[in-house]
Amino acid sequence: IMMYQEKEQIEFPTIDQLQDRMNRSSEEIMMLLQKLVNGGYLKIEVVEESGIRAERFSPEPLLLLLANSFVAQQEKKIEEAKREEQIYQNIFSLFEQEMGRPLSRFECEQLSKWLDEDHYPEELIVIALREAVFSNKLSLRYIDRILLDWQRNNVRTPDDAIEYSRKFRKQGVLF
Image 1 (cartoon, rainbow, N blue to C red):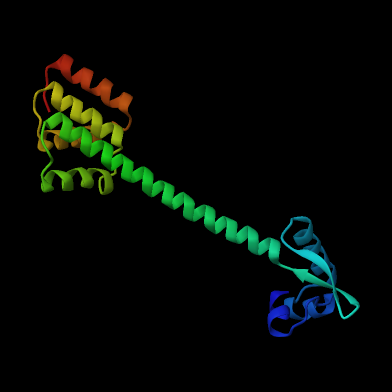
Image 2 (cartoon, one colour):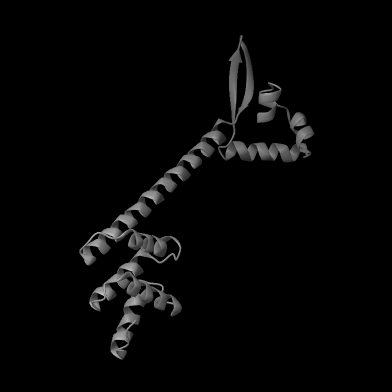
């Protein structure tokens, strides 16, 4: 329909014209057009030019739906980026607070690696930090060992981590 409108200036192609281009029966084309109109993707408008009334197809509803979908996807990406940035700010601030000093470049890179490459959830990193604070071993190497040990033992949630740490403390085993 849009090709007829743009290339040939035919605003309301006939079923026969559409049939020639689509290799479909006239019944199928009428059914498809009806679905498009009923679904709100295509509109049939009545226009008047020089006193002559005519009908035309308007793909405007479809184009608006597509544009709105694109905008919604972009907004979702922006929201995800903001949420990710907030996670970074929260976790970096927490580590600086617990360590009592600004993080070094290496420490920032390590935190980013845990989040971006290793895909550790923020909650597990925070619990690993708490374990390090509890054990009085505030180093990223120690925290990394905790996270690796949890990964090897299929610890995936904060509840898993808390339970696993309790078992370790009962056994008196350190990371």
